[in-house]
Length: 86
Image 1 (cartoon, rainbow, N blue to C red):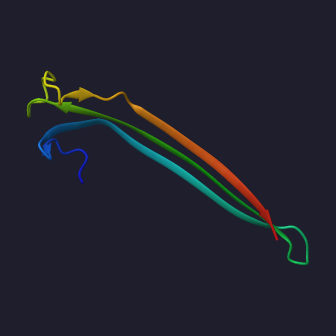
Image 2 (image 1 turned 90 degrees about the vertical axis):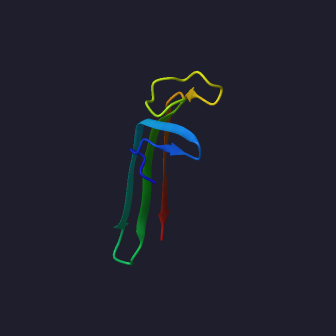
Image 3 (image 1 turned 30 degrees about the horizontal axis):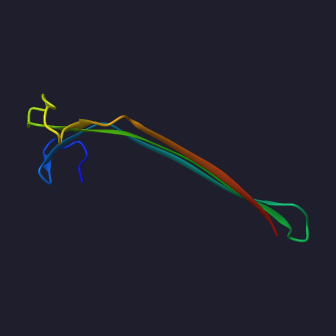
């Protein structure tokens, strides 16, 4: 779906004024000695930011009917890491 398209979706006139997704993922495996022992690390970070508006008309100028709304922006972040040895 083209999120920049401004056209009715299932009878609703929607606009996504903000849309952003960021992510980073890191993997490493480090040798600890000559016998093959190692330390493995995995880490990630994600951020999802968006907002959604619904309008009454195709000119995106009024929000007077019950189906119209202006959603508060969603700013969701998550991160984590895990370590293991072998």
